[in-house]
Length: 265
Length: 239
Image (cartoon, rainbow over all chains, first blue to last red; front, side, top):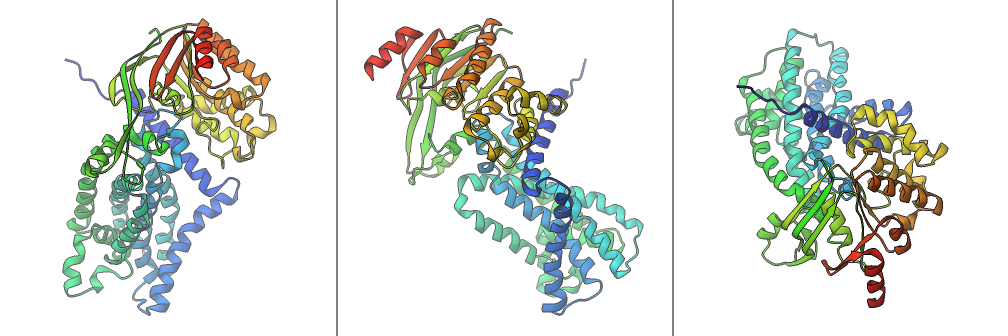
């Protein structure tokens, strides 16, 4: 008996298409020339700076190493958020390609995730900068970043598929969807760590998959300990559940994408 | 494999919601009110290797929908469509080009999307710039290109994946006379090698130079199919 694996040329083709889509997206965003590296590195600093100013100055709740605590939430959240924003317009922005070439359309939301993951790679330097600034020592727990990053990318990909469908079906609700994703950040321990929250909030916040995600980053970098099982499993389970529903739905819609963007012409 | 196109009872349907936006069949089922239009209906078409077929008809007759169906861009909602052979398509002058990217960057990116591997697309990018006769403009953003320059680049990319079935939609209108000859020569060479060319447009003289057969469409249906000169004459007489 012989066992056949997936056809390598099909996998290679998917990889090539994914990189071509994400690469062009990335070039459009950051331009070309040496300045694009600066833009790439500055984007996450700006996002983190806003929240840091809010907590340390406006709300006056700095706590211990607030920049690091916030970075542990903002950095993974930026990937989820930016992927959602990118995926909402991933079909419309590739309108001319969809009308001209028979590309593997199921990869479009994933290409949004890849593009934003490259931006996320720059943002990942921020927690380490904060550790140096606050003198927080690096421990072996930093290795927990590997599963944390994998879960973040998976959650971002999971959000990308329903976002792409929403951008296709109900584009007028795009702003509302972005607000919902942003609300999830504030319904999680984004600005302050989970262990500083008490009462009903402490009991309910773990339902939000972002809570476990943020706390996993904090466990690895801020507390220097292994994350609790629920901190890994809740976001992982949420990502798997969303993917299980949205990917088959997207696959069913994808043959009709060109039809929809033509507007019937 | 010999290139071949075989369509039987082919239909492509567009569902609209109450606001006259095209919706997918899934959404159409959820939204009770709406209308349906057939972009193509009961299309029977057989094209064998070596043939050149011109699609003629007024705007909105279904030429572009048929080309998109052959290119695998629109699904068959009714009937069957089988296309054997590697398809190369240029169905709009912009041909998927990103205005913010340079010609070279577009050639690399679209080369991959058209079917080339990453390395192959990178290695032939420079050659595509020469074939498209873009000169120094190849390293400038495509947004600065004229329609003709875009069409030349788009065509060079479409032919880069060495298609066996080439589908072209109204590109002659955007090209200068010199590059028209390039496209015509390429189309004739492809047919001589056993490939298929299906081309739509309103420049019947140009179509006649690469196609011996014409298919006339009206309201999404094939109304005539036969020798080019005969069909075009009948079409002109009826317009």
